[in-house]
Every structure is written in structure tokens, then in C-alpha cells.
Image (cartoon, rainbow, N blue to C red; front, side, top):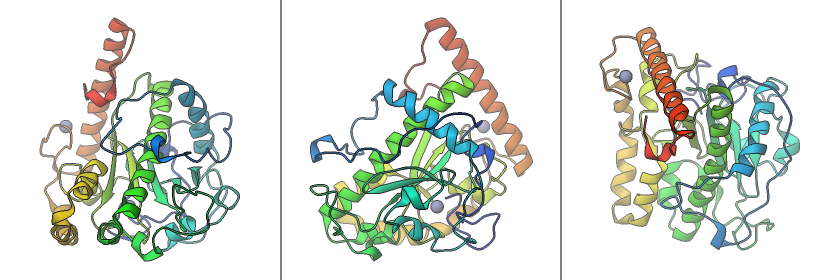
Length: 325
Ligand SMILES: [Zn+2]
Ligand SMILES: [Zn+2]
């Protein structure tokens, strides 16, 4: 969701009822992909957030790109009602999201997670990954049982405080795996529309505005008409503390001896949104949002030119995981 700190105003809320902006997923065109992807067959196939950041799936990219473009085209066909604190929870508890949610809302789903379009995208690409409820055990994905109670999925805090370590690890892993799949779709679309890939961030808001834990997957350009305030921008800065990268959450879970302090710090994160406006790429002080927008556009143009020059010389783009731009 766009911003997790102001649930009421349509401008700033995470509400999921606004038709996705054209900025949500790049230019729309094209054909569709299929329905639910296959559940991961065993624990051995599940990736841990601390591993495997450099994979590449050319074949998957092919199909996912078509999917993303289809979604960006078919906007505003469906709505679950007005802005609501419970909108995400409503999606997460659907037993048949594929048939209940329009393609303009739902990007992909599997037995344990959903990926939906953020209605107020704060970048060219912006999606939310939600754990479904009931959340079935990995060993039996068709089970109607949930490995953890619904209130453990309220937000990041409640999941961190869940005393079933296995369960919270499983949820985090499922979110991460779906986020990686979405990232592949985004990068494929980047290649098709701009000729190169750029960075994608994955993280949670310390203080969400809507009930039900969700992982933001957002491209780091931060170019979008819905990015309108300093708080919007600060809420997605990966270096500020309000937006918590999933890798960091994974480190918290790996060594959970400080979990109570972590949770306390999350509750105190609201003040971080008042941090003076600076560029998240070069740290330059920026006096207002129109200037920020111009500044970010310039970054984008420069990065693209540099990437395309590199590709022209070398025939390929280095992995975005190396953060060359
Ligand atoms: Zn959010
Ligand atoms: Zn800058």
C-alpha cells in the first residue's frame, strides 16, 4: 500500500479501492497469463530471504511480463467498496481470490499469498504481498488449517511477537518468495518499456495504516503522481527506519533476542516521517515536492542513459543486485 500512516484521506490512504494508476505497472497492453501458480512442493524449494538474490528466470519472465501488462490495462473493473481499514484483510481471507478479485486488483496468488496492485503507487511499479488466511502449513498447502491465528497477521509487530518461530518464518518465507516472483515480473516489464532494469525495494512499514501485514514491492525510481508529500517519500526511504527492508526483518528473526526492543522501536517510528526532505538516491536537500519530482526525473533519465550506454557496450546489463546505478 502506498503509505501506511494515514488511513482516512483518499490521497494518502492505503485504500485498495481506487483504480490502479497508469503508473502502477507501466504502459498497458496485451495478453494474459494463467491462474494460480503452482504451490511450492516442498521446503527444499522455498527460498530464505537471506539467500538467492541473484537468480534469473528468463522463461518465467516471458510469461510474467505479459501478465503485468494485462493487469495494468484492465483498470477499474472491480471494487470491494470504499477505503477501508479492513480492505486488505478482506482480500487475504477470500477463499477464491482468483475469481473474487479483478485482474486490475490481483496480480498473482498461490496457496499462501496474494500480490495486489497498490492503488496509490508511490513509484512506477508498486505492489503489495499479503499472506492469506487461513495460512496452510507448507507440508500440506491444501489444508484448511492455519499454522497461526488471524491476529498474528495483523501487522509486522504481531507477526514478530508470534511465539511460534516456525510459523512466523514460514509466513516470511512465503511473502519473500512471492515478492521475488513479482520482482521478476517488474524487471521484465522494465526491460520491455525502458530497455533496462532498475532497483526494486521490498519492505514493511513500521506503522501500517491498514490491518493485515503486507510487504511492499516498489521500484526505487519513486516517480508517481500519487507521491505527493514529504511523508510519502520518507515512508519508503529504505535508510530511514520507517520502511523496513525484508532482509532486515529476516535478520531480526534469525536472532530474535532483541525482538521486544525492535517492536518498541517500530511503535516509535512515526516521528521519522517528519525527517527533512532529501533525495533517497543522493541525499541532496530538497525544498519541496515539485522539486523532488524534477530531481527524481533527472535521476531516472541519467540512470537510463548510463544503463543503455553500458548495454550498448557490453551487450547486457549487469545484475541489478550489484547496484551499479
Ligand atoms: Zn502499507
Ligand atoms: Zn538525488
